[in-house]
Length: 396
Image (cartoon, rainbow, N blue to C red; front, side):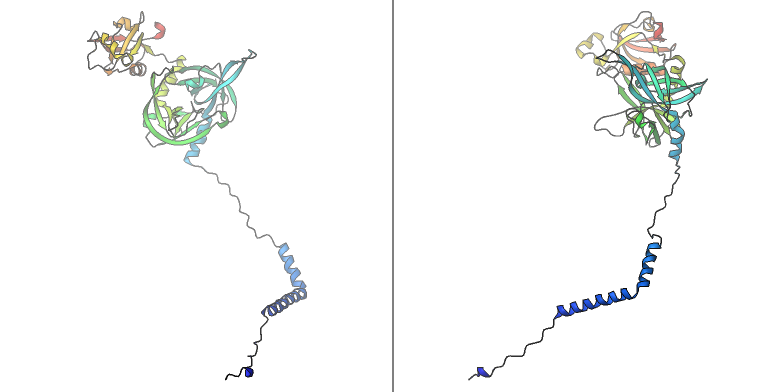
């Protein structure tokens, strides 16, 4: 039988008071630290004084100014003074008060290319100066002077302006645009979006040569001309027109003219090659215009005549292109050569003529006043050869 009365409970284990011990130790440490701090005032004050009087250890980065010179910056520095702003001023009539005032109607660029006899000469674009009643020229440093338009040419989009040479510091040197290579670096200088961005520099490469861009002067939907241009990816914007396209030798190789501005197009700027521009510039400077040879006729593209009406021309079936003579002016080279109405011009100097653009390019780019020219025309279905001596329009 178990004896419950004889059981004795085990003795209780003594619990250690860790929190009390930790608190006691912490108080001891704090008291000890205070005693040390109080008993060493000299060292403490010296340390504080040392910290307050020693120079700051923060490192201040020293600024170093570098004068960067590269081939590109040197070329730009030499060239910018020859590029100017060209402001087209016209008389504007106020609708409400009927008063007139001279106002800016457009701003472009120009390049000083010559100094002679106290005058300086600037090349720009025809569309920059078109309709101008006065021209204001702005130099790279902001100096302004009056410009006089000597003349301009619609077909090549070139113009020449004359100014006093007093403020002219630099003159551009013509290069050779025929020597340009695709991928060669070029620099465009001008005034995009007006004089607020004057002297802007953009850099790119020659993207293509011998580009032909269709131009519709009267905006009737028919191509009137093909402009021969250089293509570059250097940014060209409105206001850059007439500015300089230069190579890394600092030579003027093109006159910036236009850009293709379509939503899907990026980086296609166009410039007139200086080798094409130079003879036009010289003619404008000398005569105030480009005197071109004329045949003394009005013409129609064969392709624009409906097929059901072409049968009256009695052309062979294999003739698909040509230019139809619509009218012959009296006392003209055409009349003297025996050209007749409804003749279809298919060749000029053995060069095939498919349309009026090809005819104009041959006449304007390859012939001069007084030159003789051979024509081949279809008349009543027969091929006829004619000789013509060209004159200028003032003689008609």
